[in-house]
Length: 360
Ligand SMILES: Cc1ncc(COP(=O)(O)O)c(C=O)c1O
Picture 1: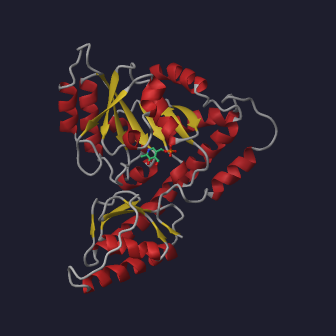
Picture 2: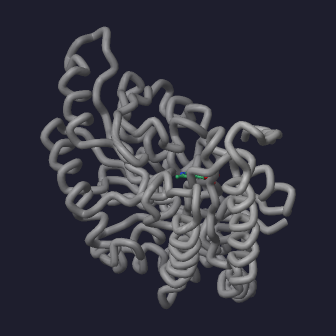
Picture 3: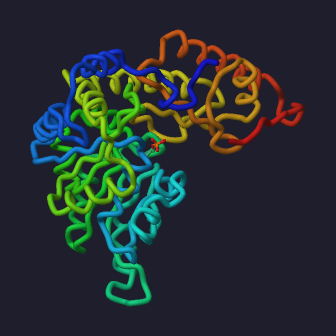
């Protein structure tokens, strides 16, 4: 398979495997009381230029659900885009971990929520009314699920609205490194502009192994989060090996180098696809994902050629680039799509016999 299905299909960066092996000597205290975990706290505080408590965690879903669970009462509402992973793909983990939080969908373009729509949603929420969920937080995916990135200005505007209404900000950074590379700003800039209170920090999709993290900036969230982590079974006893993965991930810019590779390949593939007859980009490419408007018969052809990708509609395909996507994979995808797109162009409309594949 020539694999453009997801960025979680890739390998583990060798630096991370080496760091786990290196941590594998002698004994260390359990449950985050080891020296790797202490270093993680310092390293991330440095990176974000703010005191940051870092909790390694197994999955992005757990990071999101547990982060949101400390942001509101069970009758709270979390504002997010209808494309947000927390809405589409986490079986309402936020509601589960918090004992009731509800997701409230906010409109916007290109997978991002619009500040104006957010403001109206909060205004119309019925603040104080006992029969309504109460605004608790806004959750922003950076980069978004549609491969776009909030600009620093957009983040400042959203942050100002959230502050005005006294609600907190969660960032789903499953692809934070891809967004950072696109913006060309520092992690501190990004988090400060957005006024992030709590961050789901992704690593697995970008060369990580078995661990993401929750990063807490609002000190009042530390204690409730630590209890919730423990009672939901996320406080690993052998935490040093998780901390070692994350230390290696950010060491010497590895995370940014990996993301830059994935973003660059996506941009190049997208540029070439958009230049082909009959194809156009459905979304701007700002991270490592390509959403393409493409005839279903071209998608059938790609599948026959052994190209892995996801159909996101009858005429939309998603291709995801990884830190380890190779040039030959990119060339194979481009040459397959070029061939099938040209064939479709050559067939007069209405004379074709289409076989639409399954819809995932
Ligand atoms: C934007 C976003 N957030 C969170 C996640 C959750 O990650 P996990 O699959 O580790 O639960 C994903 C995974 O696809 C994602 O794309």
